[in-house]
Figure 1 (tube, rainbow, N blue to C red):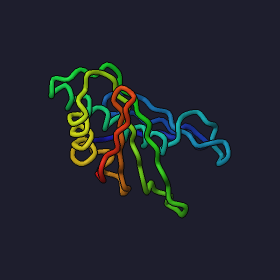
Figure 2: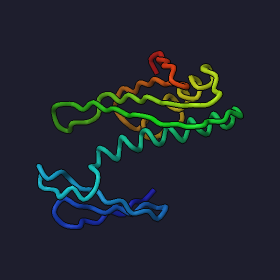
Figure 3: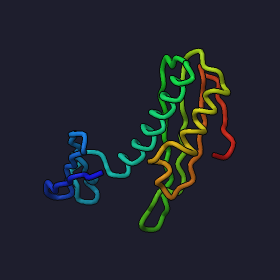
Figure 4: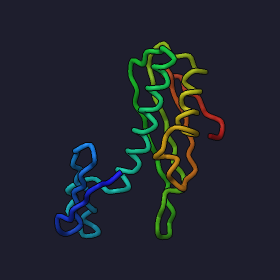
Amino acid sequence: MNIKIEWQGNMHFKTETPSGHVISLDASQEVGGENLGPRPTEVLLSAVGTCSGIDIVDILRKMRLHVESFAMEVNGERAEEHPRRFTHVHMHYRLTGDLPEDKVRRAVKLSVEKYCSVSNSLNAKVTASFEINGQRFEMDEV
């Protein structure tokens, strides 16, 4: 994979993906940026959640299950010292539909442990929980 990145001045960069999309990233004003785009760490957490979400939807479809709605929250904790890497990422999934708890649990587990290349590329502890139609379920250590 080859990503092209071009400095736009100050702390602002534009990146062009192999799929032809352009993403503008910037730093906060507190550190000299102009807030012209998300921070790289925000995009990284977004990528973790999206990668896992794609896996889960795909796995549930292969199980012939219909997801009515799907949302998630991804929380990341960072080290205090530089390089301030993510040390813990927690993903909480909210799904609605006629979805058996054991099937959703299996899809989440497969995504987090095996298929999500983004979360598996991090040097961070990754945990997960989920809700089906408002009922919350915790995952064992994943």
